[in-house]
Image (cartoon, rainbow, N blue to C red):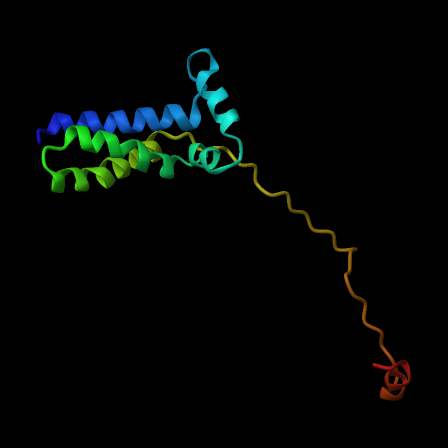
Length: 125
């Protein structure tokens, strides 16, 4: 296998997986496909980049590999390469920091102070 076939297979795996999982596609065809898939098995498959890349990589590995052992090794390699590309190119969503404030006047539990232990026993503690 030549290196450029590996590179082409990897880029094609990433591109097709990204198109199916994260993009609307031309004329919103892909987004309609995802809506039609719903929340079932196919819908969940289209929501997960990692899962989808495994199945997109399978036919590409079959087409680019020359022998069966090479095809079997290419399958997870193309999926893994597409996942690495996705991690490198994905935009990080900015999360707002949690709001924290201290209020010294708020007390969750107040202790009762008594003069003797007999008062606590009478109260049932």
